Amino acid sequence: MKYRLKVLLSAALSLALGHTAAADDDAAGNLVRAQPCVNGENIDDLLKQKARHSQRDLGWHVYSSDDGLEVERAYMVSKAMEIRYRWRVTADGQVFPANKRAEELCS
Picture 1 (spheres, rainbow, N blue to C red):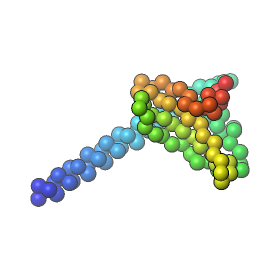
Picture 2: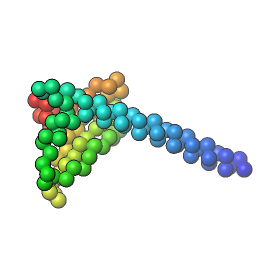
Picture 3: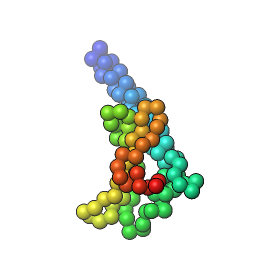
Picture 4: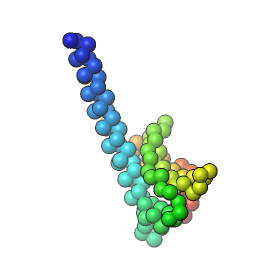
């Protein structure tokens, strides 16, 4: 009986922690999407304009990094080539481009 209780408590804790991580991922993604760029547009607006109908949208993804989270938007250009835009979001909510494509997007 004690073993079952430990397993149930462990599963509940894992689910709770997973939900918190998902909320952090959503917040980081929203910060990047809303980041202002040029002409009053934000990153999300500019990426929507850049996307071509022939490119498959691979969506937004959030990854853990040493000093916060990394948010990425990817497009499939062909079977052999993907375009990736990547930003680093620090623990205090600052957003920095993490690759050259992301850097050039708002310049």
